[in-house]
Image 1 (tube, rainbow, N blue to C red):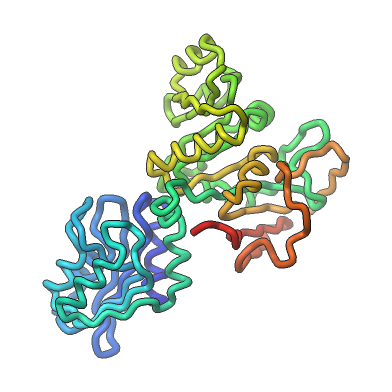
Image 2: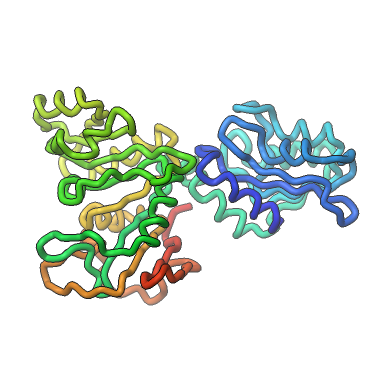
Length: 360
């Protein structure tokens, strides 16, 4: 199962909105074949593993990180392939939360006489499918927040200067992260101040849509985002009161505009997040600013963080921090990240991890 989990991660960024899945076939202690879900619409991990076998897999044990599907989707049911191959035992990491499966694949195999064990390395298997489960069960993308900050917790100076806080290795890690996202979200102030491209360089397996929360449609047509909208998608989340002429100019430049109704920013942000879920976008990277990240944090909607800390000091009561909003009334008694990963990138410290209150 550990090998199946390792294989599954190879599909990251290519399989969404499907989950990452890995599979290994074993008989008499020997590996007969292995596979993983490589790309959305392509064969599932079980089929890939069966195809890789150089001998008849009849009587083998199949280890798979997620319950085999039993319905016709982009591909035929994996349960059919397992039964045709004469697999004697199936070991499953976790049950598939998708309503068309949700335990039915396991039951179908058992009814056909296949021995099925469920829950081997369940926690690690669940880590693989957390974004998929969020989309299926809650209708919204998995939300990752990323920021670079100084040693004293500032994302910019009091004058708004923010280039460059992190070093080149940290920026390379950011580009790799962007390259597996469905969308990247920033507020209008960040888009104006930094004038970013928000692209992955070099390109990753996915091309993220750049999203700006721009209630009054005030983003400059001269910004890099608007200027590149015809080659890399740009979506502007605007309010109902946005000026029609500004809307026209931005649409003519190639931007998609989504009207987010609501009397306050929180309502409009909620509309946007669930609109992305309806598009079946699985991973959303939020790159600032502090008010936008803070609003999501206050709603318990930040599922994962990626923070780059540079050994620099800026100071200043007016210099912004990465997470604004109302914040917590008390310091949390426990760590805010589950199993955090800490890495040294040159002089920068890279900390990443998931929040324990992420509704998976």
